[in-house]
Image 1 (cartoon, one colour):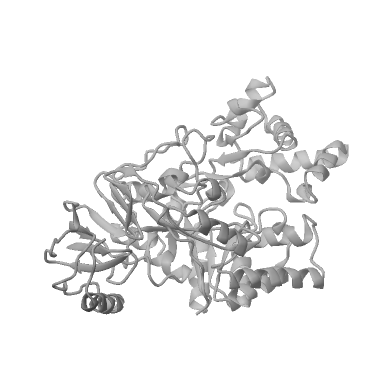
Image 2 (cartoon, helix red, strand yellow):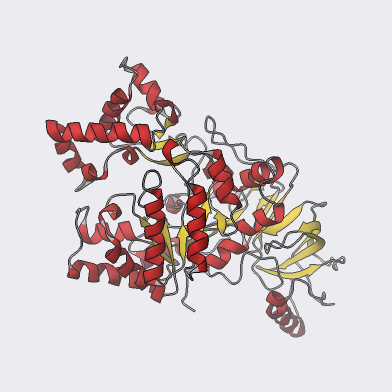
Length: 535
């Protein structure tokens, strides 16, 4: 460990304090550095043009950004030879549920992700503070924060009851949200598409969101509907934000199904109109034309009330089963099914692992059933009775994805789940979201300038989370950094073969430690469990 004189320590603090006002600082004559990234093209995360400079790290801080060579001393000098150095990417929508057993988070870190926000879609952890304490004790390889989940809290208080809460139940839920905010939640997430959140009405969600707003948090919304009913879903989320006076993120924004293609034109105008009226609404998006969620997305919501045993009883009632069957056929035709069973792909199905990577159409063929949506609906019911499945639905339009990702108030986020090679057939976003934006939407398609793409992955989500020490390359900021080659960076993961790490990202630094070094991953556990504090 290199020791600094008292004078140097004071000077370092002064440099750090001055950092947020300007990206450059005059190198101090007796300051030693741990790592110097030399000959890099700095994209500082603000969207400003890149510039050639050296970036020096001491401990967990960026301590110099200089257009002229820095004194080497005993620093490790990494010559990045004109490649881009940017702030570490911030994933505003990450499924971190496996992290207690997957603390390395390699599928995220190798993409350049240094900070991720978990607990989306209403599924935040509970009890909240105890969960964060357990993560603290074992360490994590990237910085992680969490949202408190509406669905988790509703289930804890009301189970899966399809009704409004009593006054006492609502008070208990409000207290749980307030507790989580005090314990460090960054806000509240809702999954109004999922059980039991889909049984809630506007006053309930507004009341809980007000608790998050009181703690300085944000509201992220998995809309009630993303296919038919998309426009109404966006309007509801905006109204929740307006009434609760809370910043909004329309999370993994999309238009599902054939009937909704092109409707992003309307939803993005709604964002612009709401912002003009003073409602702080933004969105995030992943760069793929397929969604991933459960098999239950094809099942009418009324049929899922009160748990699996109630669902099973309904399937044995001829009248209810007929209604259930017709509802699934409708969804296969008009919503997540996209009108074609070959668009409905199995990601994980433990009872029939041969189906992982194959489609509902393949299952119908294997069973030698008529090749109709009605046959598909029968197998969806069977799959639900056998425990459900993780699914990939190829039902988005590329034009909508491009339009959404280009909007200035839209951030990049993966919606990916932490995973390891060989673990099912997941959506490739778990391995490739951020490099895919850089490769496909910047380099190949020209939808975004590189500087803007980096802004959407760094300072924009940092500001939405309220992070003041990450997301920008400036003196005094945390040393979360990624180095990539804009000419070669590429997502290698595909829907057929998703378990492939990206290429063209040789260095990823988390709090001053190289988690990826010359392309090799190191499980250093240098991440932090972040806790939000109200301003």
